[in-house]
Image 1 (cartoon, helix red, strand yellow):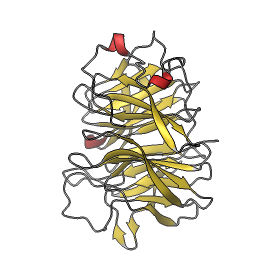
Image 2 (cartoon, one colour):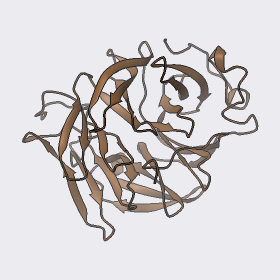
Image 3 (cartoon, one colour):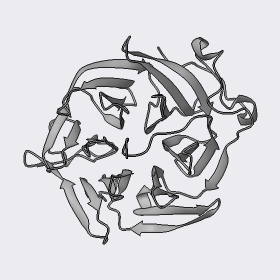
Image 4 (spheres, one colour):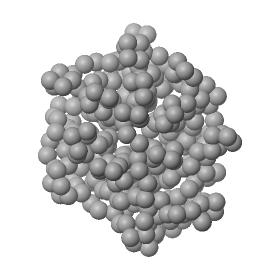
Length: 323
């Protein structure tokens, strides 16, 4: 169904606002006493928050080509520089950082999926498909088997594209690269369900294109099939990044101009659908999110210029799941 059209609301009065009637009687996913806390500001474009096994958050400042580390509210430092326009990132089962190196409007970026080894060396996991350079790897998800699924759209300049599709790929532990979805126009955010049976992908072809949340069945080999739309935003700015809680709900960053916030979807595997369980508005346009903290009950959200967090009543899954 299309996203609800609501006027801008005060944050204090509308946190954890339940928009789906079916969820009205359920306990709130965000406690009424919770409020957004701004942790950092002045970013050129925030992205890729990830909870590090060392017990802290890292996130991207994409145009400035650096990964930042949060020490305390208002206190950040450069965790890694020269990131080749790194965007989405996650930690694998061995604690190594896996990153999507994209491409900025100025041409900066590695256009590859890479892994930062424990000694700081950077290993290329994938940069070409059938001999042609990737478009601009954007976001990724690692499953319990160590397989990395990532999206490869292109926003901005398109004069150096080599591939015929903006697809979704899988890199197996042995290094094999497979295109698993080639039917979307501009895939962006991505998740793998906790049981490893479903691949969630954000179709974000705005402006003017489809803005939807898709689900694909995953087989034992990691192949994707039976794609279906779980939610159609009906235009505007769709989902950028997503995070998964332990009950299987999808927490997605989407929207702009007074409708920006966290859209929480509750998938129904039996009916192969999803309902909009809640909406938590944000003061700025959100770009990505992740669960963190010792109990994984803080939702960290990057925006176009800042980093926020809010305490939730649920816990997020580890990355990769089952770790």
